[in-house]
Length: 429
Image (tube, rainbow, N blue to C red; front, top):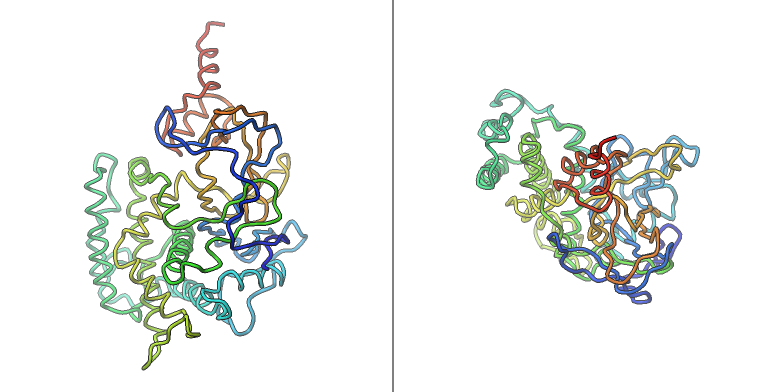
């Protein structure tokens, strides 16, 4: 049985502790979690065993365990040294804090039991190779800014303003991006990738790729052990990372995000094209000649994974859905420093089941990272029918909180605490 942060995990849904809440419509729109019984202070409410998709910031990729998110600095080390074995040479971006975490990662990422994770290593390695080649390809036929002749049609997205942004404008941009990507795929992976992505775009691309891989594994083998693994040694209700259909239940914030940051549309389109180019290189470099092997019969799953990834990226629908649910739904991966020491954000992750908890400036739940999982527990006694909420905002004053929430989560907070503090602030002194 694999281990999760030293705790046994199982691919069977954990039914030992039923949920303490129901997911219901809220009076203000959308859904929320509401207590189905009395919950005493300190009670573990939910443990999300693993994220649906995650990314460790590029600059921290050697310092943070790819399995349990342990930060080397907290163990008195500058970086981790454990990697996949020699048979996986070239698997860039995957370092581990221990052999235990490495072995658990190998076990969990097998599409079919006993076949290893060569496919996973190759996807990671291909990403790093493409990054190292980024912008180094020949400049013949390129437009200003490193764009090729096909992608130059998207140059107008670099100068859009908030007045341009409508749902129809965004849809047209993505349709054009599909056409450009198709034209680029005809040129083949050997032409190289000529545009330079920012560090944030590369991190976002890795997050999206992680989510795409999970969806593709679900398509190739719906019973794969990586999909439904839950912790069996954690108190309270435990949930797995979830399935693609679960992710789609999260709110799509694309329109609100692009309206607040119009430049993000060009960035997201560039990420989509980058990943489409990456998958072209995978399917071209690794396709065997002659007989096609079925991964269920012992053949390598890489070609089938590559084909499914290419299918996902032949249109913008799947990557667009992932990116639309990134902003406003993900949780930061922070180090384990105490509050008074200050924390370092190491990346971000989508915990689908944890995203059901809405915001309140006087929350009754607190979240704490436990390895690669995240634990929610009651900050105070919670009565039946009361909504379970966490806090999204860090600002102290009510004015700063409201600005932060509207800017980053696209809503105006009307919780009881904000109402009372605004009322107090308006009273004459």
